Length: 121
Image 1 (cartoon, rainbow, N blue to C red):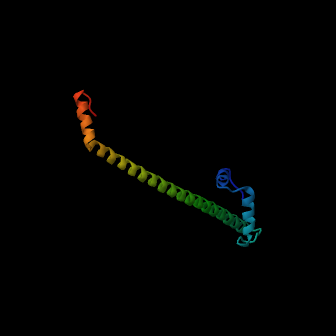
Image 2: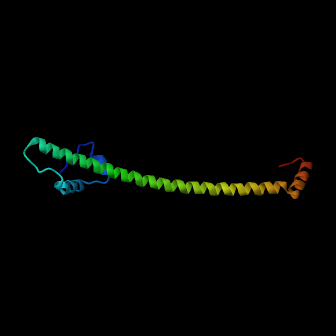
Image 3: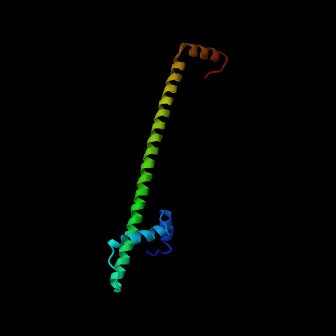
């Protein structure tokens, strides 16, 4: 089984690994690992190999999580841009409507009458 340092445990838990998953993963990969020997160098190499595989698995899981988050943010950005375009279109319509009202003859007559009493828009 792969031993974790105190600083690695929160990272491992945050990425969704459990102690049993790590134990199962290290036991499943014995086909690639060198056979256990009593030679200290070969044993250390095996531990280093398992540690490197563990780090690679963490990196792959992090990369997948970040890619998923990036896709989610891209979808959200597209939604916000579509909403912005719709709002801009509505604003343009309303500005054209107000311009048409202010350019109309009845509006000008009303404003002329209002100016006689001292009020004007």
